[in-house]
Image 1 (cartoon, rainbow, N blue to C red):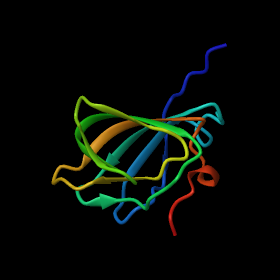
Image 2: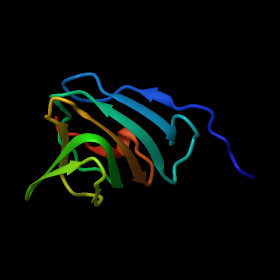
Image 3: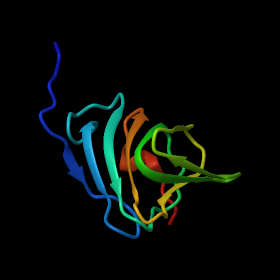
Image 4: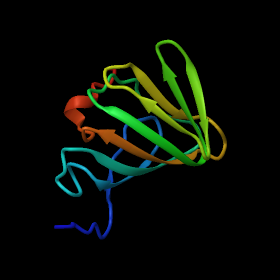
Length: 120
């Protein structure tokens, strides 16, 4: 049977500035562990701690630019572009440009504070 999601749940984000995470599907909003889908709205200059998550993360940038730093490289993902970051790879996300970024993030399996493994 289909499950309609009427609205997202806003979740507190990690990082140096306030970022809006609207979880539509995931542990919090739909009690779904298979995957999570959230819309992210990051301000200019936002940086989150590095992490080594146990899940794959797929991001599609809708507005602005999302910077993705790995152990090997730094990649800028602009509006209309996407990126896949595989599980167990160290990664750090940021939005250094003046307009920040808006993007959709899908995590498989679902994002969990217990499986993201953020840097201290």
